[in-house]
Image (cartoon, rainbow, N blue to C red; front, top):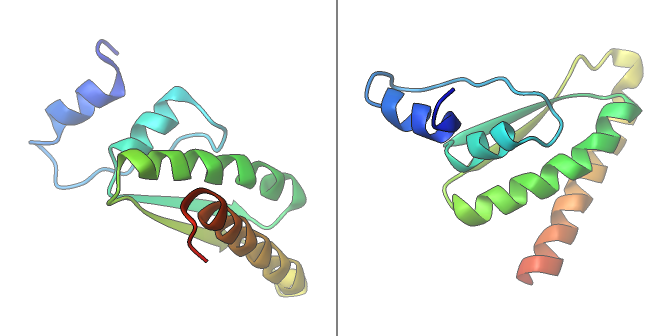
Length: 111
């Protein structure tokens, strides 16, 4: 696409009230552009160990995007959690909360 996502987004913004953009969970150029130009980012997370391992990297990228887009709101949604996996889902949620707390304390002095 000529001009990249940001140029397309700005042009199409006058035609639409909102956008839903589904990108891969891994860090990518388009994913960063989407975050910087979005009002809301929803991160669906399957409560498996492999997905959680990648989540830390994604949260770091989101925090950088928030430095450029102060209004960005982020929701991390754990999906497909079976009743037998609720304990591990709670552990993953605690892990996400501790990552966010650590980031805010280290980079912004907020506890």
